[in-house]
Image 1 (cartoon, helix red, strand yellow):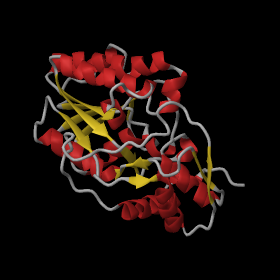
Image 2 (spheres, helix red, strand yellow; image 1 turned 90 degrees about the vertical axis):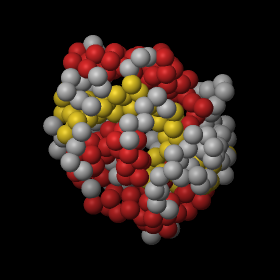
Image 3 (cartoon, helix red, strand yellow; image 1 turned 180 degrees about the vertical axis):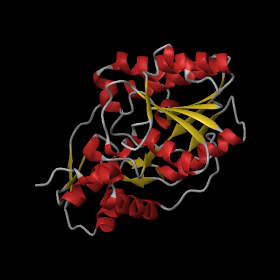
Image 4 (cartoon, one colour; image 1 turned 180 degrees about the horizontal axis):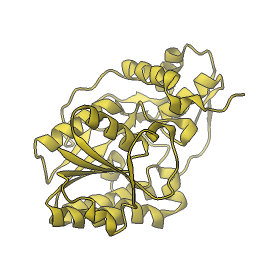
Length: 294
C-alpha cells in the first residue's frame, strides 16, 4: 500500500514511517516547512508541506491511506495556544479529508482517549474531539483511532518529547531525580509504539472505515509504578520525588480505556518488556547521543 504520513519528523510519524517502510509499504513522509530538525528523522526523504496547506491535498494523489500524525501533540502546547491547536488538530484534518475525497484515499485520524470525556477536560482534548467530528461528518473514508499513552523508539525527551516514560528515562539516564508533580498514583494505559503501528496497519488492511476504535493494553499503571520500572530498566538509583502540587486542567486525572469502549483487540507486549526495549533503543540511537551532559 502507499501511505502519506503527516508529522513524519515527530514521534509517531517517524516511527510509523520507518516500520511501514520495513514492512514493504511505499511511504511518502510529510513534514512542515521549517520544522524542527531531529536526528531520528534525518535519514527520511521528506516532503516539506504544511498539512493545512491546500497544496497538501495534491500529495494524496496515488496514495491509498493518509496517516495524519501532524498537529499539536501535547496538552501544554494546546493550553498555551488553543486556537492553534484547533487549526492544526481539526482544520488540517478537514483539509486532508478534502484531499482524500478527491483522490479516493482513506484517512486515519489518531486521537486520544481524553477526547472521549464529556466534556473534554482540556484544550488538547477539545481540539482532538473537533478533529474526530470532522472525520465523522465528512463524506471521505476515515477512521478515528483513540490512543492511550504511547511510548517507545522515536520518543526522545532531549528533542522535546513530553511523554511520561520518555521524561522518566531521560532523568534516569542522566542521573537526575525523577519528579512526578501532582498525584503520583494517577493512572495511564501505556502501549509500546511498535504494537500501535502494527494495529493501525491491520485496521487499514482490513478496510475498517467509518469506525472509532481505541488502541489500549487494558492495563492501568500508576505514574509512580512506571517510574519504578524505568529506573529498574536503566539500572539507575536516582530518587523518585513526588512533590504534589496543582497541575493544569486535565493533567491530574487518570486516563485509561475500559473494555467495551470500542477497544480493538491486538497484540500488546507487557509494560516492563516495552520499557526495557525503549531504554535499549535510547542507549544506542543517534537521536539520544546529543543529549546534554552535566
